Image (tube, rainbow, N blue to C red):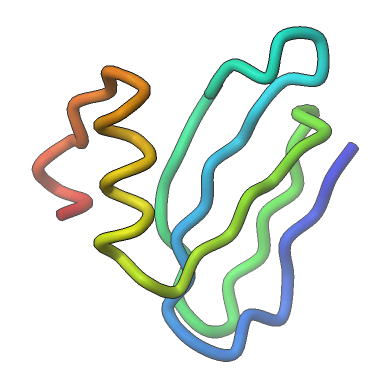
Length: 67
């Protein structure tokens, strides 16, 4: 189980599974939020454009409420 906590600035994340490294979920966290997940890999980004590019390259259309 992986955790993301105590972020000091707006942080974007991508959750991946361990077997094939596929993206299982994504989102953003505000300062003070906490995330605990069954997915073992959490990639974090503070650069929104880098995060968006990685998702787009994986064929994922970002939900409008997160953009």
